[in-house]
Image (cartoon, rainbow, N blue to C red; front, side, top):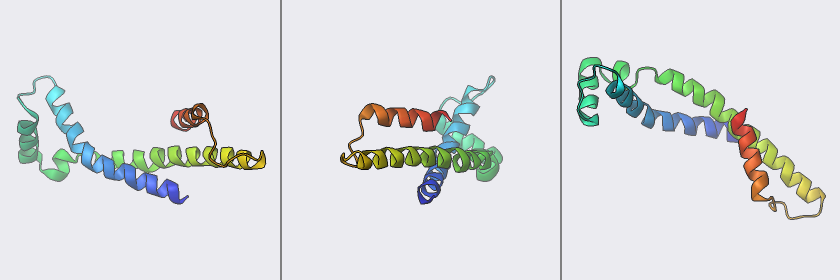
Length: 113
């Protein structure tokens, strides 16, 4: 559970940094945009709408996504990894002697759910 909470907060931290960049990108891609650079777009959005309603508009949805999806993804991976480690111990192998292909499959499974 602690790994899931840490993953959720990590994802929320990343969203805090990346969300304004996404807002700027979307504003620049919108048809009829008059912005010539990312800096100009950032200044224009901040000037017109401010920080909360401009650059961070919709950030609550990004936080919710990270809290739910990010934490579940890490939680599922940790569960699968722990099961693989326990199987290794039961078979008399080194706990962390898990092949890369198995780890990739665990990552694909946890990310695909």
